Each structure stands twice: as C-alpha cells, then as structure tokens.
Image (cartoon, rainbow, N blue to C red):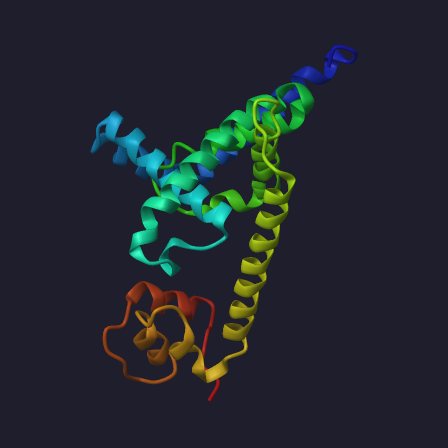
Length: 220
C-alpha cells in the first residue's frame, strides 16, 4: 500500500463491503447472541465461555469426544483442555515475530470463536493445524523442556484414535438398514426408523426434518 497508495481506497471499500455482507447474512445469529447476553451477567458469561472452550480444547487435544468417555474423566479432560488452551494463547503471541501472518490469522480466528459461549470443537477444525503449531511453539519455548519421546508418543496415540474414529464412521456410512441400530447411543433410533416407515414413537422433530431435507432413507 505504501508503494501504491491508490489501492488503499478500493481495498477499504472492498473490506467494508465484505464486513457489511457478513453482518447482514449473520444478523439473526448476532441478534440471538445479543439477546443471550442480556439474560446473563458478564462474569458468568466469561466463566461459561472459558469452561466450554476448555472442553473444546480438551476434546481436540485428546482426539476423543467427551460423550464417549466416562463421567469420571470430565475433570481430567477439562484440566487438560485448560492447559492446552493456555498454551495456545501463549503460542499465538510467541508466533508474532516468527510468523506475523499466522499470528494475525489465529488472533482474528480466536476473536471470532472465543466469545461464543457454547461448546463445539468443530469450530476449531478449519484452523486446527495452526492451533497445534501455536501450542507446539509454546511448548518449544526455552523455559520448557519436553522430551522428544513425549511428542512422538502423543502423535502416535492421536493418529491411532483418529484412524479408529475414521473406521467407525466408515462402518456407519455403509451400514445400510442397520444404521438406526448402530448410530450413536440409540436416542435417535426411533427417528431414523420412522424415516423408513409410517410409524415410530419418540420421534425427534428436528432430526426428522433434517432427514427429509437431505432426503435420507433406509436401504430396504
């Protein structure tokens, strides 16, 4: 921009246009968000968001959803998530000099996700490689001494769990008419069975609507 100042005005106009489109397209979610803020104290809101994001980071670093773990593992997963989250934040600022582009990308991404007071680790998946880069940057700081074998062991366990989940989801995908009996913990079994017949009890309306939207049906 310093060499071509004439590009500054069009760039700012384009940026304002993109921001306007984003605000307009997401106005309903923004309104819901503001409505939620009016019903809760800021301190409780911040504490709730922190706990939920610690859960997200716990699931991401363990590569296991909390719903698949026993209830006794909840405190340990939250503690691991809190450590991972703090390492991520520290790693972002350590990347400021080494890679300014990565620093600004992760900073902007965090500003978008962290104020959301709900849990959903899928929000972090698009930036997950860079999230781990930031965490590794924090662990690689001179004040820390993490054995190389610990990194290797973690990567191996992470990959094993990932391929196990991939195999499970592939097994579900090709399960055909047995899908309702295999999927999840059985809470939506009646809903999926209702998609294959005229009956069905305890049908979840939202799930049934989702099935119709994607024209899902059982193999007969």
